[in-house]
Image (tube, rainbow, N blue to C red; front, top):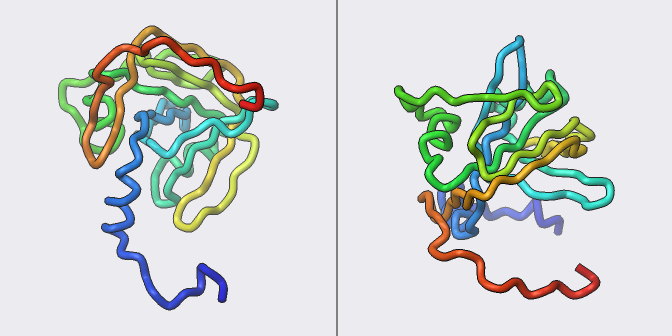
Length: 174
């Protein structure tokens, strides 16, 4: 029997709770539509490939950002820094009244300032994935600042508790 055709259902709230046990960074995906910068908080982001350099983000089809990405065909991934919970909330639809996000343009793509890192990309491909679309971007530009990242775990924002220790080199196959 096909795994997707099984008769039992997964409770959506339980699914979210279990998936929330995976600690992630917090990003804001930005794109330009109608001459304006738009952003959406997302933690479903990852590197896709080293050669060629690709990044991947998952966006719900019902999200406004879905249409913006299809229209713009370019986007930025802004990896939020610790202390940017207001930005995360703002771009998740919980508007913060006194927050005025500042943007710069890189490769004609709006990107946030004061983030831990940012990546700009051209849309290379998109694939349906249930109620989401997986957007694959060909990386154009990337930069990182010396700012620790904002983290998300079990429905809450968090920050690293200590600085990195001595790094162990990865084996050759990595």
